Image (cartoon, rainbow, N blue to C red):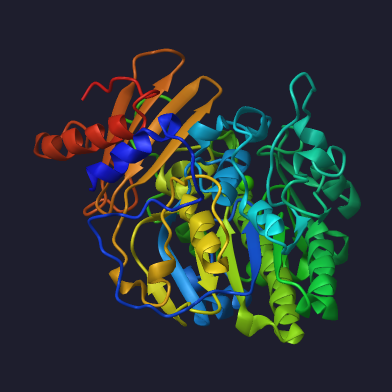
Length: 501
Ligand SMILES: [Ca+2]
């Protein structure tokens, strides 16, 4: 732990913001590799609610040949974590390199541009430097200006400004309406009767994937990349796929693929320790309605649906990667792929996001292209706030504000020497507020619900990798607890409650 660096981060709000500059860990010198790896272009891909149900991440069932081939030609980060387990705050952090608490974003209904107008996104920086900057699909997700009402059920096509960010993109298209998605696909099997959007658990075995928004996202990205004009001007092409976000709609062929998986294998894949962790502070678990009332058969149906949506998204990703290859620009184009946050699909007896636990916070993160090691694995702990400063460095973009994240660029050619950095996350919604820090060996968190005193929790990942037992009362952990609590207090000095440890 580098306290100097965290002290700097803690003081972020008070510092003059002088550049989109990653906070380099001063005690970990950069590797000697000086390979010039400036990329001409960037293909940036963001995916919604994707956990590590991905073949190249070792998932036994997920069929993701295109993510696997991207990993084979690039570097896969195995321990990347988001700073907030929800679309809007996390996506804003990925695109700006600034943490959600400084952005003032705890939900999808607000936008940092009102509170922190000097904070720029990576595509915005590129655009200001003369790049072509375009968006297809859902990349950012933020709210309306003050005084306007927000209707999650109508997000996307009905309220396109929830995905729009004119400073970032000179041309932008798309954003799915959950309602329209379902209506376009015919009969819906309703597992959980809450409204569309959010965590509604509707499933559809769409016969023809062409009606799904991600097909058009890919269509438009493919057409744009194939245009010979791409060779004339540097570009940042941002592509956002909606699946596997609910509703779980995927073409019949992908449902059929997972129909063949035996029930016992599905049950295992939903979580090797699928039981609910005991003795956690109130509010750590969300205990989605699914796991209070769904039958085992319904749970398996949802899990198969999630995997079908992952494979469907992967299929569309493959079309976009093929288009990049076909353009002749893949050798000069950096590809970045990141999930906005994780997602519980049965682990810890949960089905949802918005929990300060590994399954909701862990994200896929891959880079490929010029200067990136091929077929490499980076096992160091990183945050998705590292993405913006890393990409800015690779594109040679002039900084305009300071980032909380690290510039990982010096390690992309040889990730073995990349040091761990603790991954922090925050959550504030519906009477729950929590803070957590994840190290290579532990997750420590503090949760407060309904103005009750905050309570702490601890998982020792060395002996409990699936976060099944709260070890906060273990006497032999007292030193670890004190250290992690100090880190958390330092990181969130202005916001964190006193943790009774
Ligand atoms: Ca999301």
